Every structure is written in C-alpha cells, then in structure tokens.
Image 1: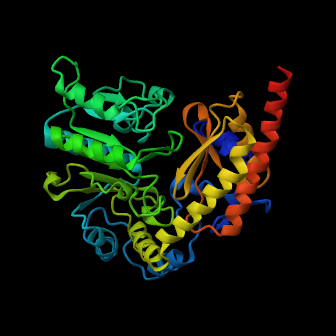
Image 2: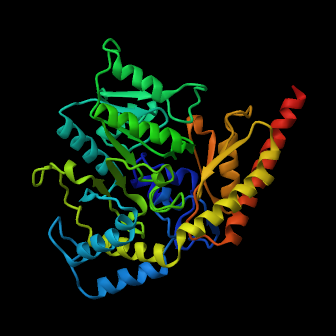
Length: 426
C-alpha cells in the first residue's frame, strides 16, 4: 500500500477503516486483492442499491459501449437521455401522479443541492434557508452551509451564513415541537429570523445517525411550507431509489415536496449522476444558468434506465419490505438484549444501532473494526459516531443478510462484555 501512502492526499478517509486493497465485487460481496471475502453492509455509501456489478445493468452498459454510441454529451439531446426520461416518467413519475420536470446536474449529489438552493433563492428573491440539526447535504459551500456537523463545516474556511437550524423530527432534544417553534418564529415579527427561501430536509438522516422523521411530522412540515410560501426541498440522495422500500422515501408520508434531489444510486451502477426534480412552475432557469461539463454522463443514463427496469421487473419494493422485517427481527431479538442502553431504528434496508447510552465512547469504532476483521464492511454515523449503520444492497441474499447480522452480534457481544466487566468492577 506504499504507493497510496506516498502519493495520495491525506484527505482519503474510508480506506483508513477498510484498509485492504480491493479487487473484485459482485452483488453484496467484495473481494480484496489477497482473496479475502467481505459482506457489504455499506453499498458505496448508498450508491450501490442494486449491488456490485449488477448483471442486468452491466450488460446494458457493455452493449452501449460496444455500439460506439455517445459517451459524453453535455446537455445535448441524445438517445440515451431520451430513453432515461421516458422510462423514469413511465415507471416512477406517472404511476405516482408526480408532475416534475427533470434537471440534470453535475455528477455528484452536492451539485444537485447547490442547484436547489440557487433555484429557491432565484424564485423567492429571499436568501435564507431553514435546515435541521443532524442533517448532511454535501461538502461544497452551499451544501456545507445547510449541513449541521461543525467539524465538516469548519473545512469551508469561511463563514457559512443565511441558514437557520432547527431540531429534527426525532431529535435528541426530547419533547420539542419543531414545527410549532418554526411557526412561532415565522409569525413573530421580533424573532430576528426572516422568512426563508426554502426548507431542506431528509426523511431519514442517514449520516446523522439514521434519525427517522415520522409521516405526521413530514405532513406538518409540508403544511407549514404551504402556509408561508416557502419551498420544500427533499434531499433523497442517500435514502431514495428504493432504499426504504418505495422509490422515494417521502412516499410513506403521502406528501409531495416542491423539489426532490437524487444521486448516488440513481445511475444503478455506481456511475456519477445527479438530478433535480421540480414542479413545472419552478423551472425559471435561464439557459445555462446552472451547468456542468459532466451533466450529460451517457453511461449513467444507460445504467439508470436499466436500473429502473430491474427495479420494476424484480418488484424490489416488496422485496425490501420483506428484508426490512427480517432485519428488524434480527436486531430486536439478537441485538437489543445485549445491553439495556442499545436502541435500534430504521426503515427498509437502512438501520441504525445506537450506542449513545453505552458507557464507552469508542465502542462503535471497536465494533466496526471487529466486523471488518470478521469479513463485514459497515460504518458508523451520527453524533460522536455513536450509531452503527446497516445499509446493504437492496438485492442482498437472505443468507448474506443473516451472516452480516451475525457478525455484528458477535462483535457487539464481545465489546459489550468488556463494558459490562468495567461497569461491574466500578
């Protein structure tokens, strides 16, 4: 690994926890150069909902490459883009009666976030944004401004302004009615907080520790936005594309955001792609007002179209619901009994095991490391990294799902025993 140490920047991060040299991957399995096999409960930070090298998607991409078709097209009209728009409208938008226009942004999720903030400010002629504690939206300046993590925000090197943060739906601040407080702030001429251009939220704060907004809270947030003429932006970048079961994570609330952001798994194959969905009346852009050289990633269009076909053909929504019940039962019966301080929460195939009430601040890192040693790739998230986040591919086999949960249980059991010994000794 000397070549990485010698030449790659110190900014590298995931390789410090997952420190093998990886070579191959298929489905929910990753193989190191030395041949060691890992079950993947990380899924490319949510970019691989359909697994590594999904065979159906791969064959579509290979056929496209063999045909010498356009691979780079900026925002020109192409056959690949047309087919994606047609399929996305047919499979996703029309059945849900969603009337959205599609903006193809730069290749990463943070670019879609930036576009949404610019658009909201352009439409409303207001500059402020309301965001939530525990939220994560990206690492470029606009996205960092609506991200609450102080450590990440400090990397900007400048003041990040025009954003007001409020406690999230399932907040560590118990018994606090965020919607009621926001209403009071907006109605009070002496609150010192002006009406914002938009409210940006995640239905599940994945990086924030798998914090889940209730359907009731999301409906109230929608109603508040409507009452005050504020645009509602749903960042569905990590928990969209079927991660919670339905294609969009906000579907369980029966509400419709003004703007929806997708990236990560939208391309189906881990290829860079991000899109912004907006109600038609919000499409006030002038030509080229928000652009990017790689907003026409043709291979991503091919992968995304194939992914939609695969999602529909394999009825992944029902499959995820079944696996959700399987994971819930495993965590409830096998994990919660290990320590009274443990809690679990999740939906679909994103789950968190919360250690914040266990008296060992480093226990999550110890568990993550032991899982890795035993052949499971998993990460921690949330405040003080106190939550272990389970996020396997949606296509994972039940056998591998059970194997991964067993590895987690073993790692927690061993480390909890050490904690209990210390508590007993104390």
